[in-house]
Every structure is written in structure tokens, then in C-alpha cells.
Image (tube, rainbow, N blue to C red; front, side):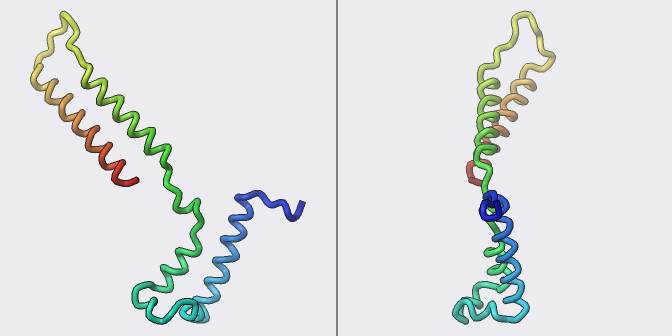
Length: 119
């Protein structure tokens, strides 16, 4: 049915119409009449146009992917914390191996903090 567009198709059509309108306004300098003149000292017409061309899909943060990566890093840290030297296995450099595990744990913790900061 003609009036029954899927949400994604409707959003794409709305975005296209908005882009056409903004392009016409930019071309005719009519965009500067949309906001008070003082606003343009802080905001460029290009930024204004870009903002209104974007859809939520363009700026959506993939929180679930971030959360999955944080969980993966925490599991890695837990595995490092639970590490027990197997009986009978002699490592050639036990201090070096322990230092390597410590650095890996610190890397995981640092990456978790960076991911949280990005959200």
C-alpha cells in the first residue's frame, strides 16, 4: 500500500526531503534567516545543515557492542586473576610470565575505562 512505508523507508524519504530543503536554503542563503543573526557567530550554516540531515541511525551509539566488549575484557581479567601455575610445569622465566600477565590485566582495565568514557 502506498501509505504504508516501512519505518526505515520513511526515515530515508524524510531525510532526503530535509536534505533537499536544506540544500536549497543554503544555495539561496535563506538558511541564515532561519535563526537570529547572532547565532551564526557560533554556528556555521554547514554545521546547522549537517545536524538536520542526520537521523538517529547516524548518531546511534552501539551500546550493546560496548557492553559486550567490556564483558569480554572483564572475563580476560578474571582469567588472569585465577591463573594458577600447573603442577609439574616449570616456566623458564616465571617473573617474566607474571609481569606479562600483570601488563595484560592493566591493558584490559585501561580499555574498560576508555570504553566507559566513550559512552
